[in-house]
Length: 217
Image (cartoon, rainbow, N blue to C red; front, side):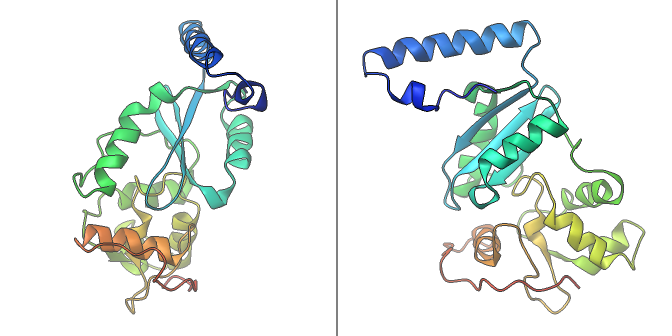
């Protein structure tokens, strides 16, 4: 796995950095042309922290919050998808642009190819339902379970949401408990509340929402 953010690159002088950047771009292009690049990744800053984005030739395969440990996420991708991973920001420009538009309230739907290979079985079914929950709307864990044809699989829906490999893009934050409480979220309930506030047209405050997790219902 090649990363241009390693200390070797960080030690370059300002005069050398543009040259190394061009060389890195050439490396990415050559790896792509020779089909040696299976997973491209980059990070983007957002109102909910730094996000790691990773994509295969089939589509976006992973979005990870900073608290998930980006290095560990990349290691897992190397094991579950391919060890041929390269820091290739330009391959993810469209994803980064659409996320930026979403966070400033200018985008309601993501128009992106998605690679769901990290989800299997019932969890994959749940993700398919989540993408059908419209911007600004919510469903309960029970409603999602019923929509998949498994009305008693409420906890399994919660597990699928908790392991969603594409948070924000596949909106598991739009799933709530039957009593209206938030439930759980991989990045914390303050982030879930902030995303819901954004979609409700309110200015999100990621520091004011509760941090307590609750079981799905």
